[in-house]
Length: 187
Image (cartoon, rainbow, N blue to C red; front, side, top):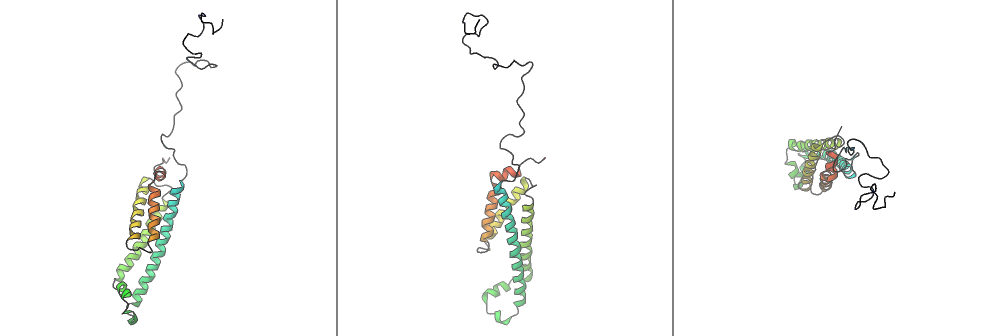
């Protein structure tokens, strides 16, 4: 008896291929079929380490913090110098100095404190990149956008570096890699 014989009652039914039902070489299983293995995550893979552009955004944020500290120190030195030179008779005719001297001492020191506080805020955000969630991502984007606006408008020449770095930080954190990193599950 062979399976090729069309008159064989024990052969494969005609019109069907050999091996219909279960694979050849394996015995049919008993009971219910096995379920496929359960996948832990659906969709995009979860990043195990910080993506390169998110890490770059964190480095740029630290650079912004360093520039804030340097700028605050320079502004504090300028405030002390302006206060010391307010009563100097040789500077009475200098229009640029008199415009700066017209600001109150309290306002000048408030600008110094604001620059330091803005730098500390950026440092806190940069430090939270490893453990922070989507709230850190959104706050970093808002911080970067405001920094870019402040870098462009009042401080055009010296703020240009701030503006470029802040725009890059907002783009890198706001991108798909940033979203995947800050929305990853933390167990």
